[in-house]
Length: 347
Image (cartoon, rainbow, N blue to C red; front, side):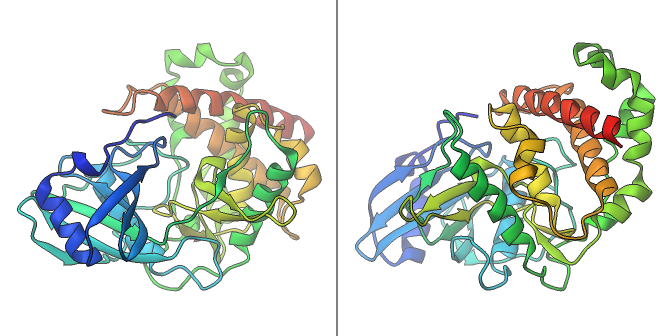
């Protein structure tokens, strides 16, 4: 998932001027936050008025533009107390430097599981427009993953549940996950792509059963709720603040946030954690139980959706500019299949 991002000097002069005008001060230094999947600048900019975290998407980066604008609307609407950096402002900036503050309402595109530049059709951006978002900078450390620290694993699990303790705001900014259907399981059952043979044979042998478990009516019942869902909750979207004796987590990158069931973020993070060398999903859930009242069948449906989503995604052509995405999806698919197999056998 390593990505070297553009830095402040790489931006066109007109864009730097527009950002400095909005900041009300000159940028004197910057620290880039490399990694992740989006292609734009993500840097803490220092000015005489203090630091600010800024990220951008450029014309031609249609999906990044859409996600940045979605995140602006959602970050501005998060309930008080949600563990997230404070959203400051967003700008649409033309190549000639003309700009306007803007927080757009959500366009109705529902959340995806993980970052995927081909998760849906790109909506064309306005001609020659940049998207610029600014947040309060957060100075924390990354989750310890080499090796995985079990205290950090516990913090992640609790943080996922903490998000779900908040009600999602009313309105269209946060779409209802109960109204969204992930079609990948049925697509795999219908298409039987050759790439299925590269996975655990159990998955191909049971793909019809998996499509039934992940059927649209089961998804609607399993995922419906009024809780806030980050919908892309992983260790790399979390910073840990404070001393080791009293750590707390802050969650970043909210473009996919939605309304749904309280268990979705915790279960959704488990395949990525296990795929990258962390504990198995069942081990995490032994230490941090799911919310009271969670239907075990709903968890199996979510696990089936995750497995099919990652398998299907991993078999597609790499999206432009993100060549490593398909391999990341593959390792999550393998982890998801192993857990799904365990859940179905236990059911």
